[in-house]
Image 1 (spheres, one colour):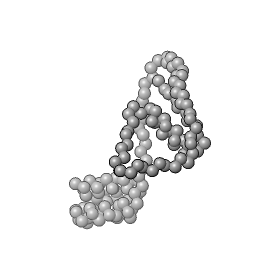
Image 2: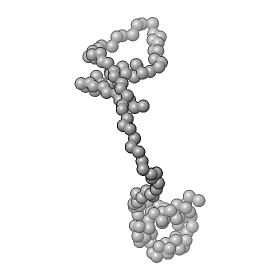
Image 3: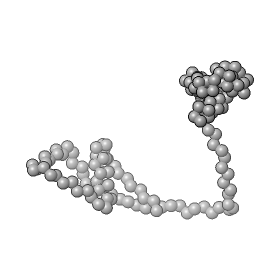
Length: 141
């Protein structure tokens, strides 16, 4: 069952007061605040007295579902993931340095030969993700 609640107010302050009053009406238990000081608490100044309002909750009428002639097979299509753009200076260079520190320059040249280049800065942008994955696999192992 669906319910629709509509609250009208002339200002945000009035709306907040009405929502607070609504939540107090819908709550099953009301928290009790106890003042433990010996002096009585000061009364807060009332800036604007909200007019009383009535809450009307009406069940929404659901239209009758339309009959389906035959079942429809749902086919999940793969969602194209957003291509990550790697910055050669910020993302790739520190990984290259860490890889060289772990494995050495010759191992780095061997890895770059898979991409047909001799420098990491010459790896085409479409292969940056693959290069980062290979470097991270060794660095994080």
